[in-house]
Image (cartoon, rainbow, N blue to C red; front, side, top):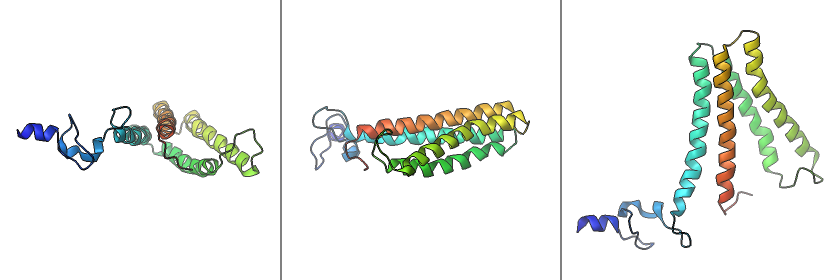
Length: 164
């Protein structure tokens, strides 16, 4: 009847057994593995986006809970981190090959900014500008940002289309 048509909907790409017809190409099956092909792409987008949202939420929570907005300075450092990361993304060489000088400067700037992201909240806590809870939320937001980068790299590595 009508429910079997819903579960075995016809689609230009072929029948989809077990999926509603409205799902269409979103749940198209990969030919070899039998698992949804674009579902992994969707997860590869949603996991890093969710982690990034949680990281920013932790920074805002660090400020809002103690009514002190100085911990948002970390977001400025995150924005500055994008510059050396963009320079590193353009290089496909190994760290120990004869890389251009800009490659080494990008690594230096990135390491300096990471150190500042960790150190600035601790220094602000040490001089009693922010509370210790704000430092915890700020550093946990940084850990979530690292998890965002790691998950984006992991899911990006699984995709075969490549960026470069």
